[in-house]
Image (cartoon, rainbow, N blue to C red; front, side, top):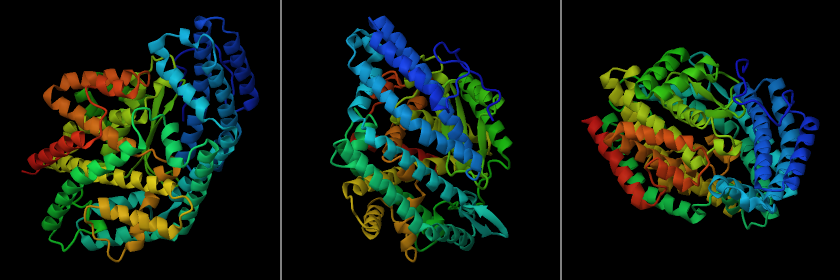
Length: 573
């Protein structure tokens, strides 16, 4: 898959023939780094030891990424699965332990304060956090959570249903929810919902096992609950769990009313008694589903044409990804669910994974993941591996802003009337996602603040949040599917508490978009300049460089809700 990939920068510390999947080869390098750190007689030598450390980290990260990509591209490939598990079980625990020793050596080093203060502010802060939270007994527990998460992916990736005489994945079934025939939409939706419910007991058990391990990790680290531990471990230096709760309130006050307005419009347009779960994706005017492309190569060509119009740098970066075979976009059985962008740390190149089936959402997803890819490309020249990754809250600004900026050029896929439809779909999707983000995040707060709860109590808690943020969809007759709706959200299983970042970032992306309406060239220049910083500056400074604010109070949510309301009204008139 990666035959064309080469190192971005020649190695100077790591041997060219290193097998980064063999601990016997890695261990001596960590020992050398410990010696270099302890022997560093001044800040200059200390900085060189850090650069060597980061070079080794990049080599290990690239090996991990390649194995993860191979496993998710084909979850039923036993060889790829075993290679992934071998790395998780044999390499990652040793790396975590050795990295902790290096972080502690740096934290205790007499010349640490002699490092260039601004340059190493974030690096030393983050390594100090690693020292603070590391517990040797948690290494094995983290390995177990990773393995459980892989089993969740494997299970979900294997699910399929018979429809129209063919076996179809659950992802492929999504396109039928856009059809105009309501009975057919209902049939498709119920097939998928019932197939998921067949696995509900197993999925609930997976979550129970994950929660038990995570609760134990937080207790080992001296935290009263996993929520507080997860927030601290995520490096959320600039906001608190209480800020997230306030964000939920702001969404309830500003976005949920707008969501209800949209559902009321949909109910009236469709002439139905209530909006049901299978009514939210169809066109309310009864037009056939948008068909942006038939085959993935069309999706790629038309997306390239968008970037060609938007910005020369972005266009060149996306073309490079095609030339190097760094796109796997088509859905197929056995492929893990969802979409992601991963980075090959030594090549300093991005890889995009998707499950495209020919719907408008695929266009949005590719624009989104391309934004992440552009982030990787923009900070290629950053020497420190750690700084080639920004905090998630800003990574998602890169991706969500690209959805909005690229969405201005959907004429590459559609005629004028269809462009309006597609843009309405996208902007309504942003309105829909804010309450969903609040639901998922609030659910995880409840989940980990109420350890020892029963499955029935968990279902009831989720139902209460659906009442609060659901926007008025009628679930009568499908109450069990509603109670288990969170089963489809892989973040709850794989990346706990990694979801509120989407909401924080969406506010930032909307601000970028608003800026572009005033001065597109400047907004794009600010966007690229902020991306080029990677993670080298604290989160508020990344937002500032993008000419946006890191704020998710009602003061910021309210004008963004009004922007969406105004833009939607203009597109519909």
